[in-house]
Structures are given as C-alpha cells and as structure tokens.
Image 1 (cartoon, rainbow over the protein chains, first blue to last red):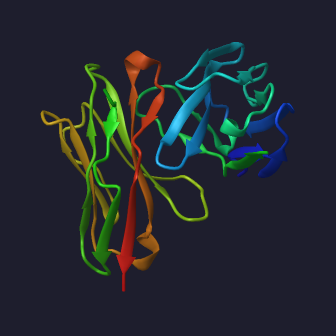
Image 2: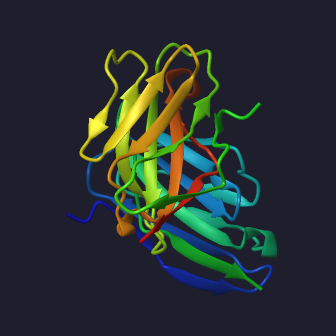
Length: 113
Length: 115
C-alpha cells in the first residue's frame, strides 16, 4: 500500500524561486494537511483541508499556498522561497474525527539558499 | 498558552528498564483525542498509541501504555522494557473536535536508551 506519498524527498532552492511539494494519498481520506518541522519547534501546521475544494490556514501559513482539487492530492506551493522556509515538510492524511489516526508521508527536506 | 507541553527535552533510560515521557495538554473541548508518535533518526513519523477523551480505560499497545489522567490533563507515555531501537524523538499530539480536528504537537522528547 502506498499510503501517503510525498515528492520530492530532497530539494535545494534559491531565494525567490517557487516550487511545489506534491502529496498524494490512496486511502480516500477526507482530511489532509501540511506540517513543517524545525529544530526545537515540533511540527507546526501550515495548511489543511477537510475535503476536495475546501482548505484553511494553520498556524504558519504565510508564504505557502494550497489547493485541493481532488480527494487524493494536496500540493503545497512555495510562492517565493526564503531561507526561513528551510525545513522538513510532512504531508498527512486521515479520516475526520478526533479519534482517527493521522498518517504521515516520509517527509521532504527543503533547503533555501 | 501552549496546547501540548512536553517538559522533558531529553531523557535517558537503561535498556530493559521502563521510562515515562510526560505530556500535559490544554483544552476546553470535551471531545478530543491524544496521540503519541515516534520519530527515529531516519525521520518518519510512526504512530504509537491513541487515547480518546471519553475512553474509560488507559490505552495500551504492546510495550506502550498511556497514563491518562483527565482531571490533571496529562497523557504520559510509558514504555516498558526499553530496547535500543526505542531511541528516538517522541511527540505528544492532540486533535480537538472544536478546532476542526487539527493535530497540534508538542515540541518532543528525545529518548536515548543506553546498553
């Protein structure tokens, strides 16, 4: 089973460049989200979606865009990369509800120089 | 105020001993879920255990158990018979119905198991 698939796994960007982190899940989950992980900060929510066509901001949304045109896909776009966006990014999916486990992708390591 | 507080940045335990990782949470939502995830050095997030706010009994999954004290708003993870492979970062997290089921994480505890 593929689960949650993120690409690319590693990326180096120059300041000002744009890029898209791809995320796909094959579990028909309603709920998808993007987190960033920085040293000493845990995982912080960037954007999330509760279903196709519905997205909302998380804790740290500035500099990122998302869209949810299908249930399966939830891409994260960096509009104009900044060194402060150097981080590890995780995509996650689950059913809605407080009791449902959230499944994570393997992470994408992004460096902005 | 932080939603999830993990007060132990790092913990050490001897192999085969038990260890408790602390987690306190802050919510006024009556419906919430508490999760523990393990992140080894390879980076993936591994689900360990779940406790629902309405669950009457503490959750257990193999060597993992969750010491849930609702009145104190604590959800400590207990790992019994520690193994070298348990060395990793451990995160406590919470989903609340009132926040649209967003998952909020603590800052984590780095556990090192010594031989």
